[in-house]
Amino acid sequence: MTDHALYTLSITTAAALLAYIILWSGLQTFNANPTKRFLRIWSKLTLYYAAYTMPVWALLLVTGRVQEVTPLLAQLSPSVVLMATIAMGLYFYTVVVQPNCLRVQHHAVDLDLSAPLTVAVLADLRIGLYSGKPRHIRKLVATINALSADAVLITGDWLYYPSADLVGQLMLFKGVNKPVYTVMSTSDLRYQSINTTKQGQPLLKDTLASAFDVLDINYIGQQCTSLPLKCAQTGNGRLRANQTSSIKGHPNTRTQTNLKDNPVVAVLCGWQDVPKQSSDAKTLQVPSKVALSAEIAQATKPVIILASRFDSISDLPKSLQPRPLLITGAAKAIQKNILKAQKKQDIRRIGNQSSLLDSSRMGKQRGLYQHGSAQIFVSSGVGTRGLPFRLYRPTIDVLTIR
Image: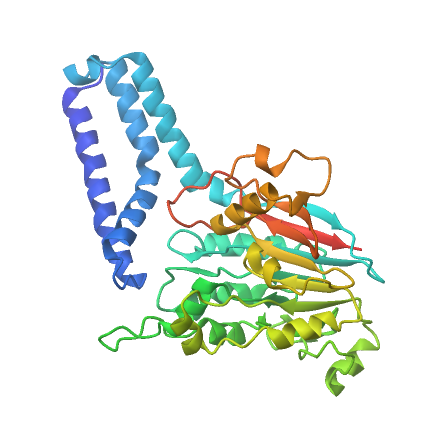
């Protein structure tokens, strides 16, 4: 029989651990630049760190019920204890285990290229509260480096309440040994504009754009570049693509010399998000997409468009030839828009898979779709936002584009 005093001590220790988690979450909240969302971030962090204690509470519950340490536990039915134990186990798995189960999925896309091109796609990194811990980024970088890919494409949604030292939090990405191209999402752009509080204190020591410069990440925004480009070796061994060029057939001199050994097979264009509020757009000086649309329409090579949102497809020119490939992430807003588009029969799934409307919302809206003016590839993403648990595994999508 379990000694009642020992069991009481175990309960007290576990409760003290939970109290420590609540205090630690409060301290971490200050580091996450909460502005007016202190209680919201505090509660999310408390839920996140509390998940690590679930095995302890499950063990105490089962031990107390089996040996009837207290009258209250003795009155619990076995089914209640079983259901509570399963619930705590699932919560521990989806918060602690699942985000570390990184997987790689391979896909083939037909874009009529003159030579095959392989790209690794990352979506919804959400570095901040839950994702982007050093162990997560190290595993992500090691997996990318082991892939036989020509480039890495990141669809935005980099941040989710990051720490003030943005460059320090992202520094491990400097270890990627392939050219990295990225755009920003609406939330990323807002981090660019919210750089000080009302008291004049900095929220972030560096903007995301300046972090990209330090990390040798090619931020294409609303620009276009040719793929593949010959890569230049940087001082730390990192491979970085050379200067961005126009897609009108007049690359700059530096790029033109590179293309002799690396012929252009496709054009990569960034389709930058525009903040919903006009005041934010004015503050951030987001350029017009009219010129970019004209460049895409005049492209002589197949076009790959990198965007953070599925509904970017509605802004594209309606009669693009050849049809571009839009690569985007699978955020909740994107999932809703895909469902609406399918109901209107504007978009359909490619392949012999079940209809998108027949699948659940969480993590199922990924893969290749056909649209009237483009093909769309939706990546399921690697980060976590909202509540701290994940219902599907973080995924790196590797596209072999032919």
